[in-house]
Each structure stands twice: as structure tokens, then as C-alpha cells.
Image (cartoon, helix red, strand yellow):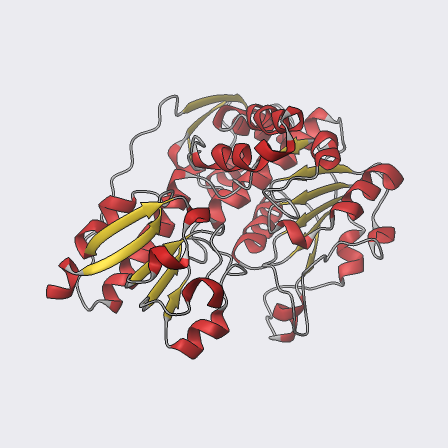
Length: 383
């Protein structure tokens, strides 16, 4: 249709396969997400963003934008009420990287237990039971691990598949992992869900993981958890990012630059979702059919007589070197304050995308049927 060649699309340059997925719909103006301004989008028809661009009245008022898509699962950077008022069609990419974040958790889970010589019967508090939290629940069930699930909105919605507990109970677990959206108002806000008032419920020596949104866990609360409760912290998201709290960074067990969902599959899923929804908006046919490259070193040989956590640790270390990411992130401590935000953004922009479990073959020696079933449940090919 004619509109395809006339549509002006302003887009974050870091959207995976941007030109392959959207050049067939019109002219693409690509740039860093933090540099998208009202002047840039004034004559645009479509705006494609990620979490670093605030889509609100300050950016959009007076523009000709009719469609906005964010290649992210979170929408706290989008004023959806304003968009609805202005008749701007909006879509997100919910669920696109849920597998990637769940696998990031599994990497941390096994690393923490093995490297800290922790027992295998730890209880995990899962705060947020949506696309990601439910996958973590499933992983723990497959490996016969105990968990406490907290999600007030799902509980009020009458979700019967899960057994829910209070936030207090979830915070008292051995491992506490956050998987909520950032909600600043309403009956169940998640802004500073972990704060100076409720850290008293933390268990001494607990392990806290935040891969949701930085503002879900207060910097001061995390630092106090380390000091008062001897907690171990893994942070992928940071309150106030890209302005990172340096003391917290220095004391974190692992530290990554908001990349828990950065698998190639997750990124392409996000692009594909936006592509299909934009095609529907433009009343034309979708055409994006990406072919992903094969993974090198896809074979992982494992001694099946090892403890389960050790097996998971060896597998995930083969796939993802989180220590290398942490070392790069902690270099930020030595930079001048004015250079830190740029360094953080560069880490994200130049990140080497991970590949998901489904790309890897596990060879177990000796063969173990129970372990085979469990690893296959995580997406691995096993023989």
C-alpha cells in the first residue's frame, strides 16, 4: 500500500535488526534512544523505543506520531494515559525476553549456591509471578526446590494455579528475586518495594536478586541489607540508572548493566512483536522472518553424578560468563562521575547477546533419565 513508502519511523538504533524489520514500512530515522527529542519526532508517524526514552507529553505534544511501540516488557517509561487521550496507538513486547531473564536467574542461582558453598535446600521468594516469575517457579518445581510466591494483583484476580503468600513471607526466604513491573500508584505500587521499613524481614545471609526495575529496590535498603543482614546482592537494574550507586556496585556479588533479558532470541522476539503489530496498524502484511545464526560450542559434556547445582553451574558457565560482565560493569567505579552514564549506555549498546538454552546440546555421562527430563524441561537438547 502507498503508506508503506511514506511512513516516517523514528527509532532507537539499538532495536535488534531494526532496518531488516521496519525499512519495508517506510523511512527509518535511527538514533540513540536518549537523543530522541520533540524536534526529531515532530513529523514522524511511528516511534519505536526502548526503556531509555520517555514517551510522554514533554516528548510528544505537537508531533504527528500515531503509533508507538516499545521493544521492552516494561512500560513505566510510557505515559499510557496521555497516549490514550491523544489517540496514539501503543504496543509493548511483553513476554519477549521472559526465557532470557529466567535463564539469567538460573545462572545466578547455581553460581551463588556453588561458589558460596550453600546448601541445596534453600527456599526462594519470588516477588512477581508474571511471565518471568512463573518460569522461575516452574524451574524450581522441576528441580524439587521450595519457593514462596508473592503477587497481590494476581492473587486478587483469582489466579487459581498459584499459591500466594505475603510480601513479608517472600522477603524472609533464603533467596529473594524481584520480577515485578514498576508501578508508582494504585492499590499495589512496586516503587521501592524493598525499602528501609521492610528490610527487617530479610533473613540473615539472604541472597537478593533484582532484574526487574531499579526503583523496585531502594539503594539504601540494599546497602543496609549488606551491612546489617550480611546479604549478598546481585543487581542487573539500578535505582536512578544510568547514574549508578557506586558503593552498591562495589559490594555486589554480580553486577550487570540492565541486560538480564539480552539474549538474541529475546531481542528478536521484541522486534518481531513490534513488526507484526505495526503491520496490522498500517493494514499491510508482515514480512519479517529472521534466521538466527547457529551457536558455536553448543555441545556441553556433563558428569551426571555431580550434585544438581554443580551441574547447572557448569552448564550455565559454559553458556554465559557473568563474571566478565561484572568486571566490565565494576570498571565504572573508577571513572569520573560525568563519564559513568555514557559508559553504562555503551555497555548496553555493545553487549554481546547471549543465546538461550534451546541452542545447546547436553551429553550426560553416565546417562540419567531423571536429569535428562529436568534439563529438557529447561529447553536443552539432552542425550
